[in-house]
Image (tube, rainbow over the protein chains, first blue to last red):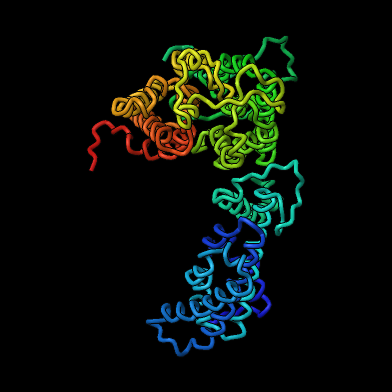
Length: 209
Length: 349
């Protein structure tokens, strides 16, 4: 059942074609919850990518030792270990980010993006391929979170990464840093991506219909 | 089926001196002349979407005129901004989607006008334009355009503004003190706000004539009733919805008032204050977002009134018409399904 894509395709697919958020709608909880500022989105993306990479490495290496019947429990234990590492690391070195992300760092344990990649990929493929796959998915995840965070921060606070970019004339749209803003922005982004990917968008098809 | 009701036959070809080489019927077969095929029924009614919409606009004239009288240039600015942004947004969406031009049906104009009438007179023009564009683009066209929207677009635009700019959206000025949008008028709480936060009751005469602070078009119960009754008489709005909405508000708030007249406002005050009249006659009766069945209309109005009183008495905000209608909009598909009439002879499982 191992994958037959080229190594490059294995890496690239997670960034756009099989992007975890835009194409598979995985990991929506952190995507919607912490992207009220670009900083938070980046931190959450990096933490998730770290956990994804490390647990893919472990699970891919141990894939022939974990009994099939208890594999999910096994994955969760491994993932939880690395989440604890990430959580403590952030709390020790970046206390302000750790405070603003709140419970969402421990909640990476149940991020379906991570468990999904282990079940669908790492448990069936070698270490090298699993790492490439995780890295691509992680980068795709980070990109979406940062783009969402930037859009919401500009409109909701008038700044990017904490630096004010819009002058005093701009009244922030408070709704954008509230949950409705997350749903609206993500919905519009996914709609744009689907429109861009729509195969019927080519000119020849349009002329016929 | 009388003669006039029959579908129009093809227009008669005008009498012309016979020219053997030119067939006068040829112009009927221009490629752009569509052959219209439709299944039965072929009854014609004079009610079309534009006709209904323009009647609603006519019904809003008294409230709009009074807003202009009371709030003067502030009202002019907000109404013009809101309507023109709605029209421009509608035009742009038509272009992007490649649809036909839908400005003449008047629906975008109504959305813009209704939104303007629900805004406080001192609200900024930029914010007004934003809310209007949001109402048209997100509230209407993201759901598929006129007839497909789940929520009343104007109210959705207002909800967006309320969530975005909570302070300007709840800052009110006294009528006749505003000259220009950005010049400070005399700020004053709305009657509902006065009661909720300071326990002060307002005179009924002010609530009727609209000489109170509040949103542009909602202050005077009389002007809204004139327009609303016109709509009901012409049957462009289902009378059951405003009736049940007002009745349920009256009864539910009456129960609380009877329990403790000191701490809860009287049901008459509840009826004539805030945006209830405007909401009950012009927003809740939106044909697209309210139930189609008679029983459904009763459920819709009763539910909206109940939610309204709960928000007004126990919520954080003094006013809840917008949220009560939006919440019932969300229930409309469910109500329609629940009140589906039986087919003749049908036995339900």
